[in-house]
Length: 93
Image (cartoon, rainbow, N blue to C red; front, side, top):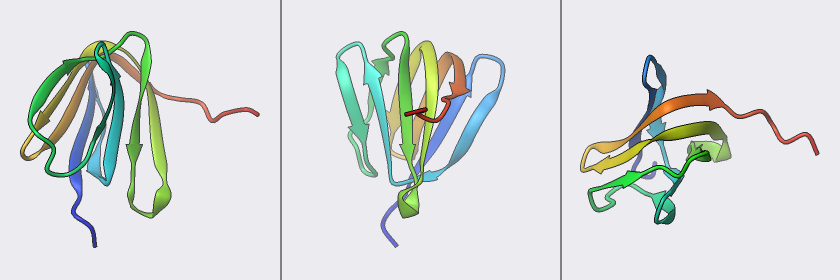
């Protein structure tokens, strides 16, 4: 099994999702950022509004609409701390 990344998606008042993932993709004020296991630690401000995508093993993807907040990448994982975060609706195409 490939190395996993511990991810937490947290809004101001509640934990939205926590678990293991292969990759996290978020849009910061500096541009879109993909985070894989072993990524260099960093702190980024989330672009407002935007989406955070969590790619799970097996190809499943969780997508959250976020407003404001920060992305913190550490040696032990990544935390998205948003002012608000809700599961995005599936694309209706």
